Length: 211
Image 1 (cartoon, one colour):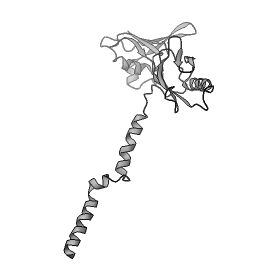
Image 2 (image 1 turned 90 degrees about the vertical axis):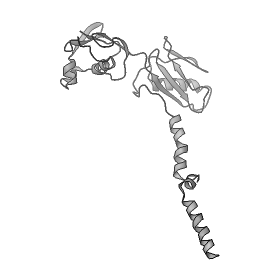
Image 3 (image 1 turned 90 degrees about the horizontal axis):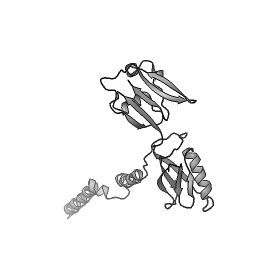
Image 4 (image 1 turned 135 degrees about the horizontal axis):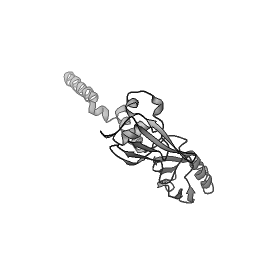
């Protein structure tokens, strides 16, 4: 009798120690990790820039979130006239403002309809900032200007230079105070790490010419 009792107790202890039984316990660490994963992935947003000084322009795409107000939260493009359309507020000027300034403007408008609205603006796509690449690049045309993009990065987006390019005499054309200014760039020196000062940050409307 005692031998059967000991055998039953040993079997019960072995069952409790099995990994499958531990995973069925709601308080186990494995279960908590599985539950938290969807919450993290669900909160992820596409962010084109985190620069607080970025100035919104026409054709940019904005994610506007009003806390606990799903009907007011949405993703909207900035129209060519620089405005966006939102419930309750109708047309709101967005172009020319930073995301924080636009959030403050929307908050002020919503204060007429609700108490303490909390507004967050995320720039999902930058379509208003453009540069142009011409000449002996592998791809020429219009490209989106990303924050702090340099000449070397822009040429990388264009697939580099063609075998026929004169990479020592590349230049950027830029309008400065109504005048066209050239900034020369030596591709071979840049990729070798020489004269890094010539690899300048580009501005909206710049044209890179590869002779």
